[in-house]
Amino acid sequence: MNSSESAAPRPQHVGVIGLGAMGGGMARSLRRAGHTVHVVDVRADVARAFAAEGGFACESPAALAQQCDVIVSVVINAAQTETVLFGENGCAAAMRPGSVFVMCSTVDPRWSAAMEARLAELGILYLDAPISGGAAKAQAGQITMMTAGRPEAYQTCGPLLDAMAAKVYRLGERAGAGSKVKVINQLLAGVHIAAAAEAMALGLREGVDPDALYEVITHSAGNSWMFENRMSHVLAGDYTPLSAVDIFVKDLGLVLDLARSSKFPLPLSSTAHQMFMQASSAGFAKEDDSAVIKIFPGIALPAAKPHADDQQTDPQGKAK
Amino acid sequence: MNSSESAAPRPQHVGVIGLGAMGGGMARSLRRAGHTVHVVDVRADVARAFAAEGGFACESPAALAQQCDVIVSVVINAAQTETVLFGENGCAAAMRPGSVFVMCSTVDPRWSAAMEARLAELGILYLDAPISGGAAKAQAGQITMMTAGRPEAYQTCGPLLDAMAAKVYRLGERAGAGSKVKVINQLLAGVHIAAAAEAMALGLREGVDPDALYEVITHSAGNSWMFENRMSHVLAGDYTPLSAVDIFVKDLGLVLDLARSSKFPLPLSSTAHQMFMQASSAGFAKEDDSAVIKIFPGIALPAAKPHADDQQTDPQGKAK
Image (spheres, chains in turn orange, blue):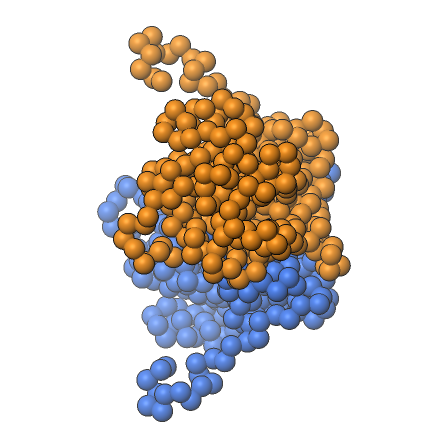
Protein backbone atom coordinates (compact mmCIF):
# COMPACT_ATOMS: atom_id res chain seq x y z
CA MET A 1 0.00 0.00 0.00
CA ASN A 2 2.96 2.31 -0.32
CA SER A 3 2.37 5.40 -2.38
CA SER A 4 3.54 4.58 -5.87
CA GLU A 5 2.97 8.08 -7.22
CA SER A 6 6.36 9.49 -6.30
CA ALA A 7 9.64 7.79 -5.50
CA ALA A 8 10.62 10.50 -2.99
CA PRO A 9 7.56 11.98 -1.28
CA ARG A 10 7.63 15.69 -0.60
CA PRO A 11 8.77 16.43 2.96
CA GLN A 12 5.89 17.69 5.09
CA HIS A 13 5.40 19.49 8.37
CA VAL A 14 3.65 16.99 10.60
CA GLY A 15 2.56 17.16 14.23
CA VAL A 16 2.57 14.28 16.70
CA ILE A 17 0.61 14.62 19.95
CA GLY A 18 1.52 12.10 22.65
CA LEU A 19 5.08 10.71 22.79
CA GLY A 20 4.39 7.49 24.66
CA ALA A 21 5.67 4.04 23.71
CA MET A 22 3.87 4.22 20.35
CA GLY A 23 3.82 7.97 19.60
CA GLY A 24 7.52 8.45 20.35
CA GLY A 25 8.53 5.76 17.88
CA MET A 26 6.10 7.02 15.25
CA ALA A 27 7.47 10.59 15.56
CA ARG A 28 11.01 9.27 15.08
CA SER A 29 9.96 7.20 12.05
CA LEU A 30 8.45 10.33 10.49
CA ARG A 31 11.66 12.30 11.08
CA ARG A 32 13.78 9.47 9.65
CA ALA A 33 11.67 9.65 6.48
CA GLY A 34 12.70 13.30 6.07
CA HIS A 35 9.66 15.08 7.45
CA THR A 36 9.73 18.06 9.84
CA VAL A 37 8.14 16.84 13.04
CA HIS A 38 6.52 19.06 15.68
CA VAL A 39 5.49 17.45 18.96
CA VAL A 40 3.43 18.02 22.09
CA ASP A 41 3.49 15.90 25.22
CA VAL A 42 2.11 16.58 28.69
CA ARG A 43 5.59 15.67 29.95
CA ALA A 44 7.61 18.73 28.83
CA ASP A 45 10.95 16.92 29.29
CA VAL A 46 9.95 14.18 26.84
CA ALA A 47 9.06 16.76 24.19
CA ARG A 48 12.33 18.63 24.83
CA ALA A 49 14.33 15.40 24.44
CA PHE A 50 12.70 14.86 21.04
CA ALA A 51 13.52 18.46 20.07
CA ALA A 52 17.15 17.82 21.01
CA GLU A 53 17.23 15.01 18.42
CA GLY A 54 16.15 17.46 15.70
CA GLY A 55 12.39 17.78 16.12
CA PHE A 56 10.41 20.76 17.38
CA ALA A 57 8.62 20.93 20.74
CA CYS A 58 5.42 23.00 20.89
CA GLU A 59 3.72 24.57 23.91
CA SER A 60 0.23 23.27 23.10
CA PRO A 61 -1.85 21.48 20.47
CA ALA A 62 -2.99 24.93 19.26
CA ALA A 63 0.61 26.07 18.77
CA LEU A 64 1.44 22.84 16.97
CA ALA A 65 -1.55 23.22 14.64
CA GLN A 66 -0.13 26.50 13.30
CA GLN A 67 2.95 24.63 11.99
CA CYS A 68 1.36 21.55 10.38
CA ASP A 69 -1.04 20.28 7.74
CA VAL A 70 -1.33 16.88 9.37
CA ILE A 71 -1.64 16.10 13.08
CA VAL A 72 -1.18 12.52 14.32
CA SER A 73 -2.84 12.00 17.70
CA VAL A 74 -1.47 9.08 19.75
CA VAL A 75 -3.06 9.66 23.16
CA ILE A 76 -4.58 7.02 25.40
CA ASN A 77 -8.32 7.23 24.75
CA ALA A 78 -11.31 9.16 23.42
CA ALA A 79 -11.44 11.57 26.39
CA GLN A 80 -7.80 12.64 25.89
CA THR A 81 -8.42 12.99 22.14
CA GLU A 82 -11.33 15.36 22.85
CA THR A 83 -9.09 17.41 25.17
CA VAL A 84 -6.38 17.59 22.49
CA LEU A 85 -8.94 18.83 19.95
CA PHE A 86 -11.35 20.95 21.97
CA GLY A 87 -9.78 21.50 25.42
CA GLU A 88 -7.82 24.57 26.50
CA ASN A 89 -5.40 25.48 23.68
CA GLY A 90 -6.83 22.56 21.71
CA CYS A 91 -5.83 22.14 18.07
CA ALA A 92 -9.24 22.07 16.36
CA ALA A 93 -9.76 25.85 16.36
CA ALA A 94 -6.20 26.43 15.08
CA MET A 95 -6.12 23.86 12.26
CA ARG A 96 -6.24 25.16 8.70
CA PRO A 97 -9.16 24.08 6.51
CA GLY A 98 -8.13 21.00 4.49
CA SER A 99 -5.64 19.80 7.07
CA VAL A 100 -5.96 16.29 8.47
CA PHE A 101 -6.39 14.94 12.01
CA VAL A 102 -5.16 11.32 12.21
CA MET A 103 -6.80 9.63 15.24
CA CYS A 104 -4.68 6.64 16.41
CA SER A 105 -6.30 5.79 19.78
CA THR A 106 -8.46 2.75 20.49
CA VAL A 107 -11.99 4.18 20.77
CA ASP A 108 -15.66 3.38 20.33
CA PRO A 109 -16.27 3.31 16.54
CA ARG A 110 -19.42 5.40 16.96
CA TRP A 111 -17.43 8.11 18.76
CA SER A 112 -14.91 8.10 15.90
CA ALA A 113 -17.67 8.51 13.30
CA ALA A 114 -19.13 11.41 15.29
CA MET A 115 -15.71 13.07 15.53
CA GLU A 116 -15.30 12.92 11.74
CA ALA A 117 -18.62 14.74 11.34
CA ARG A 118 -17.78 17.34 14.00
CA LEU A 119 -14.42 18.20 12.40
CA ALA A 120 -15.95 18.27 8.93
CA GLU A 121 -18.05 21.22 10.12
CA LEU A 122 -14.75 23.07 10.70
CA GLY A 123 -13.42 22.05 7.27
CA ILE A 124 -10.94 19.63 8.85
CA LEU A 125 -10.38 16.16 7.36
CA TYR A 126 -10.27 13.17 9.71
CA LEU A 127 -8.69 9.74 9.52
CA ASP A 128 -9.91 6.91 11.75
CA ALA A 129 -6.54 5.19 12.22
CA PRO A 130 -6.04 2.91 15.24
CA ILE A 131 -2.66 1.23 15.45
CA SER A 132 -1.18 -2.10 16.48
CA GLY A 133 2.31 -3.47 16.89
CA GLY A 134 4.07 -2.35 20.08
CA ALA A 135 6.96 -0.01 20.85
CA ALA A 136 9.65 -1.82 18.86
CA LYS A 137 7.62 -1.75 15.64
CA ALA A 138 6.73 1.91 16.25
CA GLN A 139 10.46 2.76 16.47
CA ALA A 140 11.11 0.83 13.26
CA GLY A 141 8.27 2.42 11.27
CA GLN A 142 6.67 -1.02 11.06
CA ILE A 143 3.32 -0.68 12.86
CA THR A 144 -0.04 -1.82 11.47
CA MET A 145 -2.69 0.89 10.90
CA MET A 146 -6.41 0.06 10.61
CA THR A 147 -7.72 3.08 8.76
CA ALA A 148 -10.89 4.51 7.28
CA GLY A 149 -11.65 7.96 5.91
CA ARG A 150 -12.32 10.09 2.88
CA PRO A 151 -10.00 9.85 -0.15
CA GLU A 152 -8.96 13.51 0.32
CA ALA A 153 -7.64 12.67 3.79
CA TYR A 154 -5.49 9.85 2.40
CA GLN A 155 -4.23 12.14 -0.35
CA THR A 156 -2.72 14.54 2.18
CA CYS A 157 -1.39 12.10 4.76
CA GLY A 158 -0.68 8.93 2.70
CA PRO A 159 3.14 9.29 2.58
CA LEU A 160 3.17 9.98 6.32
CA LEU A 161 1.25 6.76 7.02
CA ASP A 162 3.73 4.84 4.87
CA ALA A 163 6.61 6.31 6.92
CA MET A 164 5.09 5.01 10.17
CA ALA A 165 3.59 1.68 9.13
CA ALA A 166 4.49 -1.60 7.47
CA LYS A 167 0.79 -2.16 6.68
CA VAL A 168 -1.86 0.50 6.16
CA TYR A 169 -5.21 -1.26 5.89
CA ARG A 170 -7.88 0.89 4.16
CA LEU A 171 -11.18 -0.36 5.50
CA GLY A 172 -13.69 2.10 4.11
CA GLU A 173 -14.50 5.74 3.35
CA ARG A 174 -16.38 6.38 6.61
CA ALA A 175 -14.64 6.84 9.97
CA GLY A 176 -15.44 4.03 12.40
CA ALA A 177 -14.62 1.13 10.08
CA GLY A 178 -10.98 1.16 11.25
CA SER A 179 -11.99 1.44 14.90
CA LYS A 180 -14.39 -1.50 14.56
CA VAL A 181 -11.58 -3.77 13.37
CA LYS A 182 -9.28 -2.47 16.10
CA VAL A 183 -11.92 -3.13 18.77
CA ILE A 184 -12.36 -6.69 17.44
CA ASN A 185 -8.58 -7.15 17.53
CA GLN A 186 -8.67 -6.07 21.18
CA LEU A 187 -11.45 -8.59 21.86
CA LEU A 188 -9.11 -11.35 20.68
CA ALA A 189 -6.01 -9.89 22.32
CA GLY A 190 -7.76 -9.58 25.70
CA VAL A 191 -9.34 -13.03 25.61
CA HIS A 192 -6.03 -14.56 24.49
CA ILE A 193 -4.05 -12.94 27.34
CA ALA A 194 -6.60 -14.16 29.89
CA ALA A 195 -6.68 -17.64 28.28
CA ALA A 196 -2.87 -17.82 28.29
CA ALA A 197 -2.92 -16.96 32.00
CA GLU A 198 -5.62 -19.58 32.67
CA ALA A 199 -3.65 -22.28 30.82
CA MET A 200 -0.34 -21.45 32.51
CA ALA A 201 -2.09 -21.32 35.91
CA LEU A 202 -3.57 -24.79 35.36
CA GLY A 203 -0.14 -26.09 34.38
CA LEU A 204 1.39 -24.68 37.58
CA ARG A 205 -1.47 -26.17 39.63
CA GLU A 206 -0.77 -29.58 38.03
CA GLY A 207 2.99 -29.45 38.57
CA VAL A 208 3.87 -29.06 34.88
CA ASP A 209 7.24 -27.40 34.29
CA PRO A 210 6.26 -23.91 33.02
CA ASP A 211 9.23 -23.54 30.68
CA ALA A 212 8.47 -26.91 29.06
CA LEU A 213 4.80 -25.95 28.77
CA TYR A 214 5.77 -22.68 27.04
CA GLU A 215 8.07 -24.53 24.64
CA VAL A 216 5.41 -27.09 23.66
CA ILE A 217 2.48 -24.66 23.35
CA THR A 218 4.42 -22.17 21.22
CA HIS A 219 5.03 -25.05 18.76
CA SER A 220 1.45 -26.38 18.83
CA ALA A 221 -2.05 -25.49 17.66
CA GLY A 222 -2.83 -23.91 21.05
CA ASN A 223 -0.49 -21.02 20.35
CA SER A 224 -1.47 -17.37 20.02
CA TRP A 225 0.52 -14.20 19.45
CA MET A 226 -0.40 -13.17 23.00
CA PHE A 227 0.50 -16.51 24.64
CA GLU A 228 3.95 -16.36 23.10
CA ASN A 229 4.48 -12.70 23.98
CA ARG A 230 2.92 -12.37 27.44
CA MET A 231 3.75 -15.73 29.01
CA SER A 232 7.46 -14.91 28.58
CA HIS A 233 6.80 -12.13 31.14
CA VAL A 234 5.25 -14.65 33.54
CA LEU A 235 8.16 -17.08 33.13
CA ALA A 236 10.57 -14.22 33.87
CA GLY A 237 8.45 -13.12 36.84
CA ASP A 238 8.59 -9.61 35.35
CA TYR A 239 5.37 -7.60 35.50
CA THR A 240 6.90 -4.28 34.46
CA PRO A 241 4.01 -2.80 32.47
CA LEU A 242 4.51 -2.79 28.71
CA SER A 243 0.71 -2.62 28.50
CA ALA A 244 -1.13 -2.49 31.82
CA VAL A 245 -4.04 -4.52 33.21
CA ASP A 246 -6.22 -1.39 33.18
CA ILE A 247 -5.75 -0.99 29.40
CA PHE A 248 -7.72 -4.21 28.93
CA VAL A 249 -10.30 -3.17 31.52
CA LYS A 250 -10.82 -0.22 29.16
CA ASP A 251 -10.50 -2.03 25.81
CA LEU A 252 -12.70 -5.03 26.66
CA GLY A 253 -15.13 -2.46 28.06
CA LEU A 254 -15.21 -0.83 24.60
CA VAL A 255 -15.80 -4.26 23.03
CA LEU A 256 -18.75 -4.91 25.35
CA ASP A 257 -20.19 -1.39 24.90
CA LEU A 258 -20.14 -1.84 21.13
CA ALA A 259 -21.89 -5.21 21.32
CA ARG A 260 -24.41 -4.03 23.92
CA SER A 261 -25.51 -1.26 21.59
CA SER A 262 -27.03 -3.96 19.35
CA LYS A 263 -27.78 -6.38 22.23
CA PHE A 264 -25.20 -8.85 20.90
CA PRO A 265 -23.91 -11.52 23.33
CA LEU A 266 -20.15 -11.98 23.85
CA PRO A 267 -19.68 -14.78 26.42
CA LEU A 268 -15.87 -14.99 26.33
CA SER A 269 -15.23 -11.23 26.17
CA SER A 270 -17.44 -10.61 29.19
CA THR A 271 -15.70 -13.38 31.15
CA ALA A 272 -12.24 -12.05 30.25
CA HIS A 273 -13.36 -8.52 31.20
CA GLN A 274 -14.37 -9.78 34.64
CA MET A 275 -10.92 -11.40 35.01
CA PHE A 276 -9.09 -8.14 34.21
CA MET A 277 -11.37 -6.20 36.60
CA GLN A 278 -10.68 -8.77 39.29
CA ALA A 279 -6.93 -8.27 38.72
CA SER A 280 -7.34 -4.49 38.77
CA SER A 281 -9.33 -4.46 42.00
CA ALA A 282 -6.88 -6.88 43.61
CA GLY A 283 -4.14 -4.25 43.24
CA PHE A 284 -2.53 -5.13 39.88
CA ALA A 285 -4.12 -2.33 37.82
CA LYS A 286 -0.80 -0.73 36.80
CA GLU A 287 1.16 -3.98 36.35
CA ASP A 288 1.72 -5.66 32.98
CA ASP A 289 -1.51 -7.16 31.63
CA SER A 290 0.00 -10.65 32.07
CA ALA A 291 -0.53 -10.02 35.82
CA VAL A 292 -4.11 -11.19 35.21
CA ILE A 293 -2.60 -14.59 36.12
CA LYS A 294 -2.37 -13.33 39.73
CA ILE A 295 -6.13 -13.79 40.17
CA PHE A 296 -5.63 -17.57 40.21
CA PRO A 297 -5.36 -18.88 43.77
CA GLY A 298 -3.36 -21.83 45.04
CA ILE A 299 -0.38 -21.63 42.68
CA ALA A 300 3.21 -20.40 43.01
CA LEU A 301 4.19 -18.17 40.09
CA PRO A 302 7.78 -18.19 38.78
CA ALA A 303 9.88 -15.74 40.82
CA ALA A 304 11.49 -12.67 39.31
CA LYS A 305 14.86 -13.51 37.85
CA PRO A 306 17.67 -11.23 39.03
CA HIS A 307 18.38 -8.44 36.53
CA ALA A 308 21.81 -8.32 34.93
CA ASP A 309 22.31 -4.94 36.60
CA ASP A 310 21.83 -6.51 40.02
CA GLN A 311 24.57 -9.06 39.47
CA GLN A 312 28.28 -8.63 40.05
CA THR A 313 29.45 -11.49 37.90
CA ASP A 314 31.65 -9.43 35.62
CA PRO A 315 34.01 -7.10 37.48
CA GLN A 316 35.00 -5.41 34.20
CA GLY A 317 31.39 -4.52 33.54
CA LYS A 318 31.37 -6.12 30.11
CA ALA A 319 28.19 -8.04 30.83
CA LYS A 320 26.16 -4.83 30.39
CA MET B 1 15.52 -35.31 19.54
CA ASN B 2 16.34 -37.67 16.68
CA SER B 3 18.21 -40.78 17.66
CA SER B 4 21.86 -40.06 17.05
CA GLU B 5 23.06 -43.54 17.94
CA SER B 6 22.64 -45.06 14.50
CA ALA B 7 22.42 -43.43 11.09
CA ALA B 8 19.98 -46.09 9.81
CA PRO B 9 17.70 -47.38 12.61
CA ARG B 10 16.95 -51.10 12.52
CA PRO B 11 13.61 -51.76 10.76
CA GLN B 12 10.98 -52.88 13.27
CA HIS B 13 7.60 -54.58 13.21
CA VAL B 14 5.17 -51.96 14.47
CA GLY B 15 1.40 -52.02 14.90
CA VAL B 16 -0.94 -49.08 14.41
CA ILE B 17 -4.48 -49.27 15.77
CA GLY B 18 -6.88 -46.72 14.35
CA LEU B 19 -6.37 -45.44 10.79
CA GLY B 20 -8.23 -42.15 11.05
CA ALA B 21 -6.98 -38.76 9.88
CA MET B 22 -3.98 -38.97 12.23
CA GLY B 23 -3.36 -42.73 12.52
CA GLY B 24 -3.47 -43.31 8.76
CA GLY B 25 -0.78 -40.70 8.13
CA MET B 26 1.34 -41.97 11.01
CA ALA B 27 1.18 -45.56 9.69
CA ARG B 28 2.29 -44.36 6.26
CA SER B 29 5.16 -42.34 7.78
CA LEU B 30 6.35 -45.47 9.59
CA ARG B 31 6.26 -47.50 6.39
CA ARG B 32 8.11 -44.77 4.48
CA ALA B 33 10.87 -44.99 7.14
CA GLY B 34 11.34 -48.67 6.29
CA HIS B 35 9.39 -50.32 9.08
CA THR B 36 6.97 -53.23 8.65
CA VAL B 37 3.57 -51.89 9.63
CA HIS B 38 0.62 -53.99 10.80
CA VAL B 39 -2.74 -52.26 11.21
CA VAL B 40 -6.20 -52.70 12.69
CA ASP B 41 -9.20 -50.49 12.03
CA VAL B 42 -12.89 -51.06 12.80
CA ARG B 43 -13.47 -50.21 9.14
CA ALA B 44 -12.10 -53.35 7.43
CA ASP B 45 -11.92 -51.64 4.03
CA VAL B 46 -9.61 -48.94 5.37
CA ALA B 47 -7.23 -51.57 6.77
CA ARG B 48 -7.36 -53.51 3.47
CA ALA B 49 -6.51 -50.36 1.51
CA PHE B 50 -3.45 -49.85 3.68
CA ALA B 51 -2.44 -53.50 3.14
CA ALA B 52 -2.72 -52.98 -0.61
CA GLU B 53 -0.09 -50.21 -0.30
CA GLY B 54 2.34 -52.68 1.30
CA GLY B 55 1.27 -52.88 4.94
CA PHE B 56 -0.41 -55.78 6.73
CA ALA B 57 -4.04 -55.80 7.90
CA CYS B 58 -4.81 -57.77 11.07
CA GLU B 59 -8.10 -59.23 12.26
CA SER B 60 -7.90 -57.86 15.78
CA PRO B 61 -5.63 -56.06 18.28
CA ALA B 62 -4.73 -59.48 19.69
CA ALA B 63 -3.65 -60.78 16.26
CA LEU B 64 -1.65 -57.60 15.68
CA ALA B 65 0.12 -57.94 19.05
CA GLN B 66 1.57 -61.29 17.96
CA GLN B 67 3.47 -59.56 15.12
CA CYS B 68 4.86 -56.46 16.88
CA ASP B 69 7.07 -55.20 19.70
CA VAL B 70 5.53 -51.73 19.59
CA ILE B 71 1.84 -50.85 19.22
CA VAL B 72 0.82 -47.27 18.47
CA SER B 73 -2.80 -46.62 19.49
CA VAL B 74 -4.49 -43.69 17.72
CA VAL B 75 -8.14 -44.13 18.69
CA ILE B 76 -10.53 -41.39 19.74
CA ASN B 77 -10.55 -41.51 23.55
CA ALA B 78 -9.82 -43.41 26.77
CA ALA B 79 -12.84 -45.72 26.42
CA GLN B 80 -11.74 -46.90 22.96
CA THR B 81 -8.19 -47.33 24.23
CA GLU B 82 -9.47 -49.60 27.03
CA THR B 83 -11.40 -51.65 24.47
CA VAL B 84 -8.29 -51.99 22.28
CA LEU B 85 -6.30 -53.22 25.28
CA PHE B 86 -8.77 -55.22 27.34
CA GLY B 87 -11.89 -55.73 25.20
CA GLU B 88 -12.71 -58.82 23.16
CA ASN B 89 -9.54 -59.86 21.30
CA GLY B 90 -7.74 -56.95 22.98
CA CYS B 91 -3.99 -56.65 22.62
CA ALA B 92 -2.90 -56.53 26.29
CA ALA B 93 -3.11 -60.28 26.89
CA ALA B 94 -1.24 -61.00 23.63
CA MET B 95 1.62 -58.50 23.99
CA ARG B 96 5.06 -59.88 24.76
CA PRO B 97 6.75 -58.75 27.99
CA GLY B 98 9.01 -55.78 27.26
CA SER B 99 6.94 -54.61 24.33
CA VAL B 100 5.61 -51.03 24.30
CA PHE B 101 2.10 -49.59 24.06
CA VAL B 102 2.22 -45.99 22.72
CA MET B 103 -1.00 -44.19 23.76
CA CYS B 104 -1.69 -41.24 21.41
CA SER B 105 -5.24 -40.25 22.38
CA THR B 106 -6.25 -37.13 24.32
CA VAL B 107 -7.19 -38.45 27.77
CA ASP B 108 -7.38 -37.56 31.44
CA PRO B 109 -3.76 -37.56 32.70
CA ARG B 110 -4.79 -39.55 35.80
CA TRP B 111 -6.29 -42.26 33.58
CA SER B 112 -3.02 -42.42 31.61
CA ALA B 113 -0.95 -42.80 34.80
CA ALA B 114 -3.26 -45.61 35.96
CA MET B 115 -2.93 -47.37 32.60
CA GLU B 116 0.87 -47.33 32.84
CA ALA B 117 0.61 -49.07 36.24
CA ARG B 118 -1.94 -51.60 35.00
CA LEU B 119 0.20 -52.60 31.99
CA ALA B 120 3.35 -52.73 34.12
CA GLU B 121 1.73 -55.58 36.05
CA LEU B 122 1.69 -57.49 32.74
CA GLY B 123 5.32 -56.61 31.99
CA ILE B 124 4.26 -54.22 29.22
CA LEU B 125 5.93 -50.81 28.84
CA TYR B 126 3.73 -47.76 28.26
CA LEU B 127 4.31 -44.38 26.64
CA ASP B 128 1.97 -41.46 27.38
CA ALA B 129 2.17 -39.82 23.94
CA PRO B 130 -0.66 -37.50 22.87
CA ILE B 131 -0.21 -35.92 19.46
CA SER B 132 -0.87 -32.59 17.74
CA GLY B 133 -0.61 -31.34 14.19
CA GLY B 134 -3.47 -32.43 11.94
CA ALA B 135 -3.80 -34.83 9.02
CA ALA B 136 -1.32 -33.15 6.68
CA LYS B 137 1.48 -33.24 9.24
CA ALA B 138 0.63 -36.87 10.10
CA GLN B 139 1.04 -37.80 6.41
CA ALA B 140 4.38 -35.97 6.29
CA GLY B 141 5.78 -37.53 9.47
CA GLN B 142 5.79 -34.06 11.00
CA ILE B 143 3.43 -34.23 13.98
CA THR B 144 4.25 -33.04 17.51
CA MET B 145 4.27 -35.68 20.28
CA MET B 146 3.93 -34.75 23.97
CA THR B 147 5.43 -37.77 25.67
CA ALA B 148 6.29 -39.16 29.09
CA GLY B 149 7.38 -42.61 30.16
CA ARG B 150 10.20 -44.79 31.41
CA PRO B 151 13.60 -44.73 29.65
CA GLU B 152 13.22 -48.42 28.64
CA ALA B 153 10.06 -47.51 26.71
CA TYR B 154 11.86 -44.78 24.76
CA GLN B 155 14.73 -47.17 24.04
CA THR B 156 12.43 -49.55 22.17
CA CYS B 157 10.19 -47.09 20.37
CA GLY B 158 12.44 -43.99 19.95
CA PRO B 159 13.23 -44.47 16.21
CA LEU B 160 9.51 -45.05 15.55
CA LEU B 161 8.59 -41.77 17.24
CA ASP B 162 11.20 -39.98 15.12
CA ALA B 163 9.64 -41.48 11.97
CA MET B 164 6.22 -40.05 12.86
CA ALA B 165 7.08 -36.71 14.44
CA ALA B 166 8.97 -33.50 13.77
CA LYS B 167 9.13 -32.85 17.52
CA VAL B 168 9.09 -35.45 20.29
CA TYR B 169 8.82 -33.59 23.61
CA ARG B 170 9.99 -35.71 26.58
CA LEU B 171 8.13 -34.32 29.57
CA GLY B 172 8.99 -36.74 32.35
CA GLU B 173 9.47 -40.37 33.37
CA ARG B 174 5.91 -40.87 34.66
CA ALA B 175 2.91 -41.30 32.36
CA GLY B 176 0.45 -38.40 32.65
CA ALA B 177 2.96 -35.58 32.16
CA GLY B 178 2.45 -35.70 28.39
CA SER B 179 -1.33 -35.85 28.75
CA LYS B 180 -1.32 -32.84 31.09
CA VAL B 181 0.41 -30.70 28.49
CA LYS B 182 -1.91 -32.00 25.77
CA VAL B 183 -4.99 -31.19 27.88
CA ILE B 184 -3.65 -27.65 28.45
CA ASN B 185 -3.05 -27.30 24.71
CA GLN B 186 -6.70 -28.29 24.18
CA LEU B 187 -7.78 -25.66 26.74
CA LEU B 188 -6.13 -23.01 24.58
CA ALA B 189 -7.25 -24.52 21.28
CA GLY B 190 -10.89 -24.70 22.41
CA VAL B 191 -10.98 -21.20 23.89
CA HIS B 192 -9.25 -19.80 20.79
CA ILE B 193 -11.75 -21.39 18.38
CA ALA B 194 -14.67 -20.05 20.41
CA ALA B 195 -13.00 -16.61 20.69
CA ALA B 196 -12.33 -16.55 16.95
CA ALA B 197 -16.01 -17.30 16.35
CA GLU B 198 -17.07 -14.59 18.82
CA ALA B 199 -14.82 -12.00 17.15
CA MET B 200 -15.92 -12.90 13.61
CA ALA B 201 -19.58 -12.88 14.74
CA LEU B 202 -19.22 -9.38 16.21
CA GLY B 203 -17.61 -8.22 12.97
CA LEU B 204 -20.52 -9.58 10.93
CA ARG B 205 -22.99 -7.97 13.34
CA GLU B 206 -21.20 -4.63 12.87
CA GLY B 207 -21.08 -4.85 9.08
CA VAL B 208 -17.30 -5.35 8.87
CA ASP B 209 -16.17 -7.12 5.69
CA PRO B 210 -15.21 -10.61 6.97
CA ASP B 211 -12.38 -11.13 4.46
CA ALA B 212 -10.82 -7.78 5.42
CA LEU B 213 -11.21 -8.63 9.11
CA TYR B 214 -9.44 -11.96 8.55
CA GLU B 215 -6.63 -10.25 6.66
CA VAL B 216 -6.04 -7.65 9.40
CA ILE B 217 -6.32 -10.00 12.39
CA THR B 218 -3.97 -12.58 10.92
CA HIS B 219 -1.35 -9.80 10.68
CA SER B 220 -2.01 -8.36 14.16
CA ALA B 221 -1.50 -9.17 17.84
CA GLY B 222 -5.02 -10.63 18.03
CA ASN B 223 -4.00 -13.62 15.91
CA SER B 224 -3.95 -17.23 17.03
CA TRP B 225 -3.13 -20.48 15.25
CA MET B 226 -6.82 -21.40 15.55
CA PHE B 227 -8.18 -18.04 14.30
CA GLU B 228 -6.05 -18.33 11.18
CA ASN B 229 -6.93 -21.98 10.58
CA ARG B 230 -10.62 -22.18 11.50
CA MET B 231 -11.92 -18.80 10.33
CA SER B 232 -10.87 -19.73 6.80
CA HIS B 233 -13.57 -22.43 7.04
CA VAL B 234 -16.14 -19.81 8.09
CA LEU B 235 -15.15 -17.48 5.24
CA ALA B 236 -15.55 -20.38 2.80
CA GLY B 237 -18.88 -21.36 4.39
CA ASP B 238 -17.47 -24.90 4.58
CA TYR B 239 -18.27 -26.81 7.79
CA THR B 240 -17.06 -30.21 6.55
CA PRO B 241 -15.65 -31.65 9.77
CA LEU B 242 -11.86 -31.77 9.97
CA SER B 243 -12.32 -31.84 13.74
CA ALA B 244 -15.93 -31.83 14.98
CA VAL B 245 -17.76 -29.69 17.53
CA ASP B 246 -18.20 -32.75 19.77
CA ILE B 247 -14.42 -33.25 19.98
CA PHE B 248 -14.22 -29.99 21.92
CA VAL B 249 -17.25 -30.90 24.02
CA LYS B 250 -15.09 -33.89 25.04
CA ASP B 251 -11.70 -32.17 25.27
CA LEU B 252 -12.83 -29.08 27.20
CA GLY B 253 -14.72 -31.56 29.40
CA LEU B 254 -11.36 -33.25 30.14
CA VAL B 255 -9.85 -29.85 30.92
CA LEU B 256 -12.63 -29.06 33.39
CA ASP B 257 -12.53 -32.55 34.98
CA LEU B 258 -8.81 -32.20 35.59
CA ALA B 259 -9.20 -28.76 37.20
CA ARG B 260 -12.23 -29.81 39.23
CA SER B 261 -10.23 -32.62 40.82
CA SER B 262 -8.21 -29.93 42.63
CA LYS B 263 -11.10 -27.40 42.80
CA PHE B 264 -9.26 -25.03 40.44
CA PRO B 265 -11.35 -22.34 38.68
CA LEU B 266 -11.20 -21.99 34.86
CA PRO B 267 -13.56 -19.14 33.89
CA LEU B 268 -12.78 -19.05 30.15
CA SER B 269 -12.63 -22.82 29.63
CA SER B 270 -16.01 -23.30 31.28
CA THR B 271 -17.54 -20.53 29.16
CA ALA B 272 -16.09 -22.00 25.94
CA HIS B 273 -17.31 -25.47 26.95
CA GLN B 274 -20.83 -24.09 27.30
CA MET B 275 -20.55 -22.57 23.81
CA PHE B 276 -19.52 -25.89 22.24
CA MET B 277 -22.32 -27.71 24.09
CA GLN B 278 -24.78 -25.10 22.88
CA ALA B 279 -23.58 -25.71 19.32
CA SER B 280 -23.80 -29.48 19.79
CA SER B 281 -27.34 -29.39 21.17
CA ALA B 282 -28.41 -27.00 18.42
CA GLY B 283 -27.64 -29.71 15.86
CA PHE B 284 -24.04 -28.96 14.85
CA ALA B 285 -22.36 -31.77 16.85
CA LYS B 286 -20.83 -33.46 13.80
CA GLU B 287 -19.94 -30.30 11.89
CA ASP B 288 -16.47 -28.72 11.89
CA ASP B 289 -15.67 -27.15 15.27
CA SER B 290 -15.74 -23.71 13.62
CA ALA B 291 -19.54 -24.22 13.49
CA VAL B 292 -19.55 -22.96 17.08
CA ILE B 293 -20.07 -19.58 15.35
CA LYS B 294 -23.62 -20.76 14.51
CA ILE B 295 -24.70 -20.19 18.13
CA PHE B 296 -24.54 -16.41 17.56
CA PRO B 297 -27.95 -15.05 16.61
CA GLY B 298 -28.76 -12.12 14.36
CA ILE B 299 -25.93 -12.46 11.86
CA ALA B 300 -25.66 -13.77 8.28
CA LEU B 301 -22.67 -16.10 7.88
CA PRO B 302 -20.75 -16.21 4.58
CA ALA B 303 -22.48 -18.66 2.22
CA ALA B 304 -20.78 -21.82 0.98
CA LYS B 305 -18.73 -21.10 -2.09
CA PRO B 306 -19.42 -23.40 -5.01
CA HIS B 307 -16.87 -26.22 -5.22
CA ALA B 308 -14.67 -26.39 -8.30
CA ASP B 309 -16.31 -29.72 -9.12
CA ASP B 310 -19.72 -28.07 -9.24
CA GLN B 311 -18.66 -25.51 -11.81
CA GLN B 312 -18.65 -25.87 -15.57
CA THR B 313 -16.30 -23.02 -16.33
CA ASP B 314 -13.76 -25.10 -18.20
CA PRO B 315 -15.26 -27.33 -20.88
CA GLN B 316 -11.94 -29.12 -21.34
CA GLY B 317 -11.87 -30.07 -17.67
CA LYS B 318 -8.45 -28.57 -17.09
CA ALA B 319 -9.60 -26.64 -14.06
CA LYS B 320 -9.63 -29.84 -12.03
